[in-house]
Length: 178
Image (cartoon, rainbow, N blue to C red; front, side, top):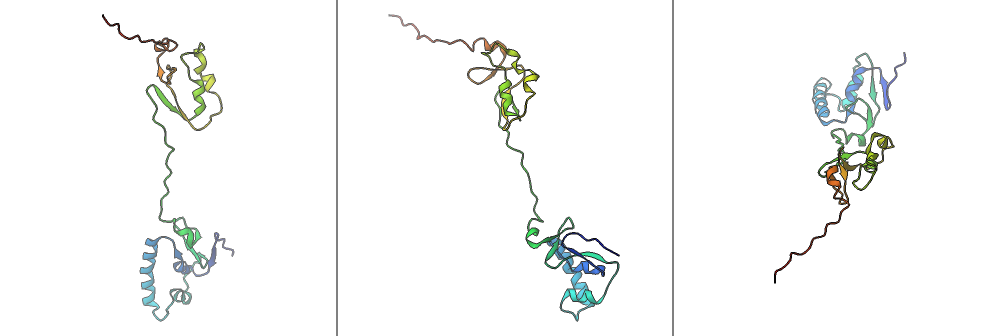
């Protein structure tokens, strides 16, 4: 009978050898220490916990971690150095999304900025869906909301406000009376 065990494991004819395994998780080790105390009471003439289990064999057999390996939470046998991450949770943060200005939205595709309608362009159809059917380039960027146009100052404005975009305003000093 062939028993296939995982990486860093061997098949032990005595299933209770599994109790001798080292485990990564400290809480599991505390539970095992309690089990060891019980076994030591039964086999107190043995100093080594593993030695007591060799004398008594409970079947069926089981796959056991090889010496120098530890059973982790997922049931794999790993080296002790790999246990240090056992009690940690890894958190992946989403990339920071910039805060966009008024009448803007964030687009994951930075090259969507090329598709924006601009006040000083005659071709207001540039921002249609055909323009957006391109390969997405990162990083993302803030783009004008649909229906808004980018003016010379970089703000997104309604089309009615675009008529002033190409005008230069001159402010005269107030006339003084003599």
